[in-house]
Length: 219
Image 1 (cartoon, rainbow, N blue to C red):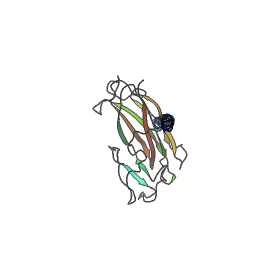
Image 2 (cartoon, helix red, strand yellow):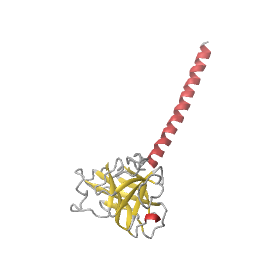
Image 3 (tube, rainbow, N blue to C red):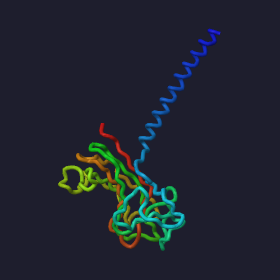
């Protein structure tokens, strides 16, 4: 019996080490995958709101200071010209003129941020001029003052970083990927503001979907 007990203990110890090794590897893989795919935005796909009854206003988790930003679903939208099917899920957001949907995230100077999303110029309600783009703005803790040595102004490449844009020359009826690839936060940063921006749209509406944002901390 003593021999059997010792054998069981040895087998138990070996099994424990084996499964602990698997667990360690699995945890490392999950950590890597999470870091590669993390999305710090709330409701980045705009699907948190129930649009079964028709169009809604600014999406949950976002702020739309100027209005004229709507959460829409192709199946239920009341837009006279219709809207494009969402890139992911059921909802996207529709914008007119110059407007923003924005979300503030906690940030620190020295962190490097990225943001991604898609936008579309829908042919049935196409805009003839203007741009759709993503911006990352870095601000101080008051949420008003631009961060960094910019004299209190936003400056491209310092505290304002913009993606490629979708404009009237972009393919119609196509979700076009946009991204801010590298945005280092300047001194004084406390907030990273992720912005879906429609700029000077003429003659129609623009649509956004599938937003994400993440950062790499300062080493």
